[in-house]
Image: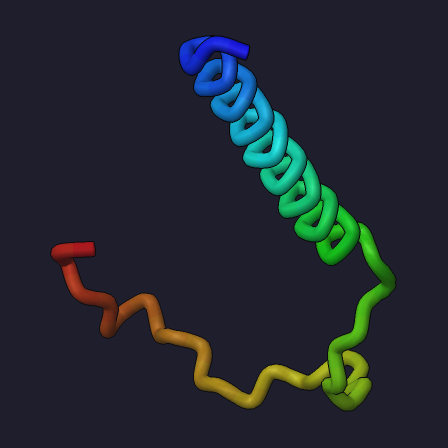
Length: 63
């Protein structure tokens, strides 16, 4: 086989391998994105608002 064909076939194989690696990485991301939630946060429910409601007389005029 001539050297140019060998180089071409090597480059084609490398391109196919790179495409397969890219596809595999995309599949990993998609499976992580659409997998069930694995957060370890406690369920807190609805929390009451304990802050102060601003008085309209004391608002800044620049707002």
